Length: 104
Image (cartoon, rainbow, N blue to C red; front, side, top):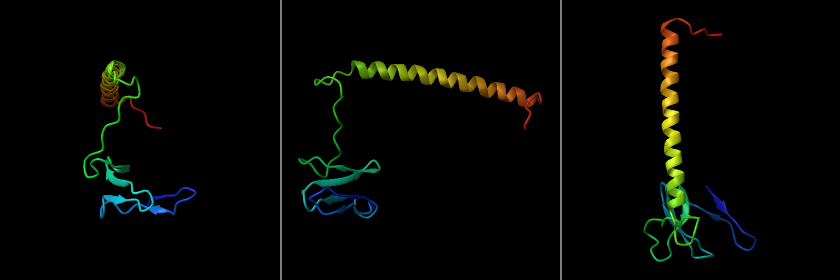
């Protein structure tokens, strides 16, 4: 059970999300919902709705070109790592078949 407390407010305990997935803070009136494994503040205009996605931390207009470049770089890295894993797995299998694998 999570507890949140500031200097001038009484402790606030979040309920078990399996029992209750939404709660209103008695001191602040904020509505909290449990979504994606964490407690988050709900949208004040639609407390029962999903949590809105946060805008990009880059430019105020939400320019996604930098984000897309990072995603492309990560995809290339994943492909490279996948290739390395396949190569290492083949080498290990060859070594095992040829009895070159020595366990110490």
